[in-house]
Image (cartoon, rainbow over the protein chains, first blue to last red):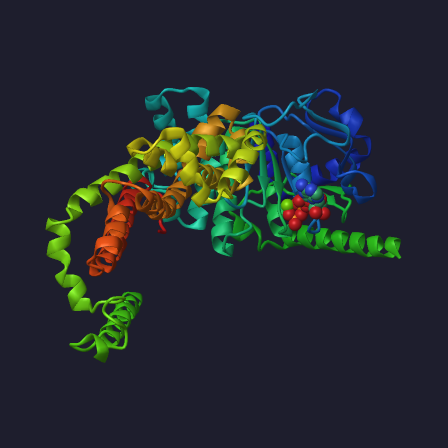
Length: 304
Length: 254
Ligand SMILES: Nc1ncnc2c1ncn2[C@@H]1O[C@H](COP(=O)(O)OP(=O)(O)OP(=O)(O)O)[C@@H](O)[C@H]1O
Ligand SMILES: [Mg+2]
């Protein structure tokens, strides 16, 4: 853990880590031998409907994410609209109608998943708050479902309201309609993270926020993720966001989605606002933009 | 504020037209004969006789009591049934025929039927309201639950909620405000329905008073009762809206 930090504080070495990931990507199997795989897709295909009207959303997806001890990996997922990013997340979450996969295997901790569960928390972009519950009762929802008694769950919920940057005194008793979009996302994050899931799935959670709120939320997320040591899958349309937040970036091809590229990217050392201006950082952003563009043009060429 | 002013001006316009159409001392000088439509003043002036000789308050009480009883019974049965239908596909499929049939049932046919089943009396009137309202209440409650975005259910699932917990902690409370709004509208409808059975036969009630006024006069009472019904319905709706704000503080909009 401490070793990791010292390595990441040095941009030179951080780049080394990227290079290492890139070369190792070829023989993922040998790299993964000593580690258990927290999430693994084996030839996963998802088709909606059947017969001539069937629609293939994702096709032959293969990847594995290791359970890095005491850390957890942050995987950012990029790709054109409709390529199947949400489908991949919902397959991991076990949410219908995307779950179960039409063919192939979705494994979590080496086992197929039966359906949704609190070990895989999910944060969505919209309709995120239970409108009939105060902020406190929103955050305490999962604990309430587990049967944690009132005093204990409120105590913990107050801690988490503070952790996500809301005011325990002023905001805890508010209802969602009294909150801004950014505050509501903070509530959604607290409500998921309070359960300490092993896997956190986030589907464009900051997509509807203004740019500066978005940067603040990115920093908050990084801070909380370091504390939780969970594996995160984060779907976004922003390359900057993906490069900043991610340890790894997956790029999906246009529909039917397949993972085309897997890139290691630098670890976020500075606040988002500063780091995302750094020339070194921008190099990665441009590189990924070029990759996506070349993928799209080769895709189009393939279609003709 | 502007909306309020427009509403008032609409009422003024109608009363003004009414006033002009019934202007004149003698029957011959009026545009509409006083045997058909009395002047606003004549209608208002008939209030004391409606209250004293025809026992208006007793009839208001009788009508309200029947509607409230029948409607409450319909809510007690219809809301849980509807919520179940909205939550579980199997319950929905099971209830679909009854709801579909009930909503298209001609009310006029329901009167002889309820007389046949329950005789003539208070019980029949309460049951008439109950049977007429249950299908609508059930359908409204079901669509309120079905209108809840899937995202809420999915969020709850990924927070570890069981389907029972989702039904009671998420779907039911999220649907209740919409159900309540639906009930407010349906109560107004039920208030109209009760007149049908009261016109047909009754010993008290606003519908009964209308039929008595039509047969024995004064005709002015008919208009007076219609105005009173409107005011009562409005008052009840405001009262329910007041409860709604208290019950569902998390709903910002009306
Ligand atoms: N329930 C469904 N039934 C049929 N088709 C679906 C369903 N859900 C998704 N699809 C299709 O599968 C494809 C992938 O959808 P998905 O939502 O995963 O895309 P996405 O990458 O998340 O897109 P976006 O960036 O717009 O959110 C889309 O073409 C979509 O139309
Ligand atoms: Mg999506």
